[in-house]
Length: 572
Image 1 (cartoon, helix red, strand yellow):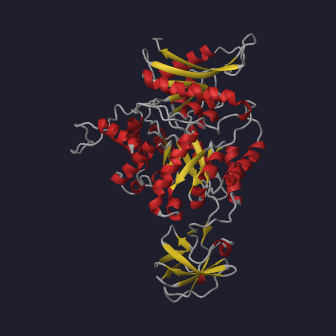
Image 2 (cartoon, one colour):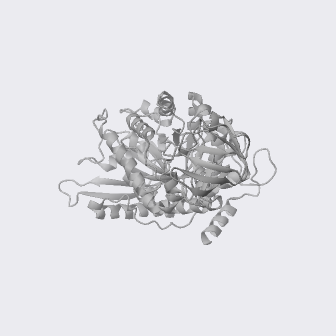
Image 3 (tube, one colour):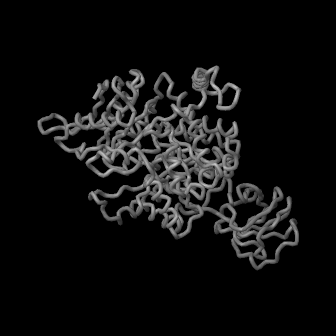
């Protein structure tokens, strides 16, 4: 309650009596000012990240460039309906990699190759699922009447006679072989995103008899949900394995693993990815390719029930509210979302809130008030990222959807970043190296101090120099209220930081190895500060905080040390 009141007070302070939406008379949150809404790399950006799904509405160079220019951090490739031909996702991935960005301008004066941008690519797998098979008589659609009896079976019913009317007799094939073992009398079967509900009245060897609780049409290949049931499904289908192998080969940054139910499922996905990466040749610089990070999608009651186990094994979480709202009572979705976001924040792992966030903008140029509140509340609750699905993939207003999302997120970010005190964050045990826990405890303390110092001193930004991304993740886990510029030596490391709130990856323009003995960290800090000024993040007179790790020289009494420095920039 106290936290809600604090947010309300900050929101109230954020309102202005003369603030109005352009073209409207009613006072509302501060007016959007396009002239001042340009912050990062000359583009519009936010502390909270935005994930955009690519599709028919955004599969052209000008469309992807529009997404990049308007604040997209991560591009999602949806494999739910993709086949064995990877030419389309490969083309979309190339569009993301080749889209314009400030790094392309930095490359002109750099002595080392630079990527055009550090936008990440997330491959969203189809995952194991249950669907309806061919209908009786190979009909295109069959109507179920309320109260009609339906036999749900694994047998082929295509050669059965088509029912004469909604009252049946009905037989429905589904592709889940363990249906009789999984369900019992009183269980429910939901068809086509819950449009039709069936209740089980009798269980046999390979079928169950049900009664339809409501009337409606059903088609083949529609989704089937079994709420409250523990499913006998593999973590990965053959299609998922092909898609994950492709993801490793092309260097995808994240994979979203669908229908994750237990920690064991996550371990299976990570083990398969590790095997795929082990088969790849070294990269051009001789380094080993990195495994895509695993974002576990929670979209079932089983996943919610085992969330702690899933979170401990995952690199991040996606709250996939579409199927989740069918698998659990819809009234419980918001509470499950808040629980997952809070636990991800405590663990220092990124969490994406997804599905139907601005759904009406697939058809309309402005969001509903409820959608605006949904997005803003997700950010205030602690989401690292919010996601657009059909809005940018197939909607009529893809760029407008992203612009609306960005404006809402910026308003919510401004409230969060006005908090006067630090949230308590425990040591992120998933990032801790058990073999050297003392070192990671030091990193935890330095990171926490950096975030608090930035707030207390009114610093403009935090600069992190990182090789693996670990230092930047520790800093981000303490929920900083100013941008964290993570200067990286590896583009893939930089892209893998994109889902963390507040982190903005930048390529370090030097051939010096930060981990090598003899490298003067002061030289790298100075280069990072020059680049920060060049990109418009800071200017002379601004205070900045730097965090880095230095290797001890032979004459030193330590192997390495973590450093935090507070500096005021001077004119070049």
